[in-house]
Length: 264
Image (tube, rainbow, N blue to C red; front, side, top):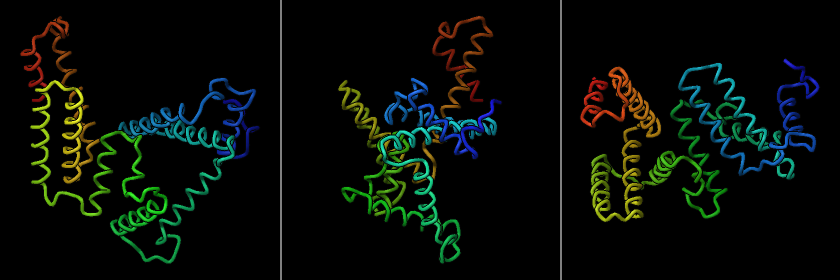
């Protein structure tokens, strides 16, 4: 490994110095032309790659992907520093202060709490912080628009449920899903693309609500189904190959038969 001690004494100092160099006049042309907007998609991508490494239980990959995600934090902090907004030290200080404030039972005079009690207290503190920062006073205002739609739907529903805006039981949610499915069916008959899209969204939102009420992570559940679909479809492809056929040569009935084999 090339000697990089000249960049600083600690790993974080070296990483910060490296980022400064990359963005300097004598740095990398690509890094120099980036903005918060152009880097944001990479930040999201790296977070998903961290999730993938965890899912695969690959510790070597997790170490690498966490590094890539950290680099995104350093990148954004460097660009902010160039605008005299904040730097990486400010980011670390703000995070530390917030974590200390949210853990009075650890760093203050708060009583010992169970994990459940701490979760409730945490949400209360976050709600107060949101109220102070909210521009319009809405409890939904800081649910990030850039979140994946399924995740944002769940968060919006959880926020609304905290003030009692929720179905009293599962029956109401299931009836809502049936209602939305019927409305989507009716919309499909109109061939109105905008209406079909709207009703599709309503149905997905209702199904997400049911998952939330059943304590199911809808994102995780859908990923599981995606993986299951891939495995079963791969089986169809394999059976076609074993018969020296292209999958395009299989009829729908043949593919369905192989699908049922894969299920069993």
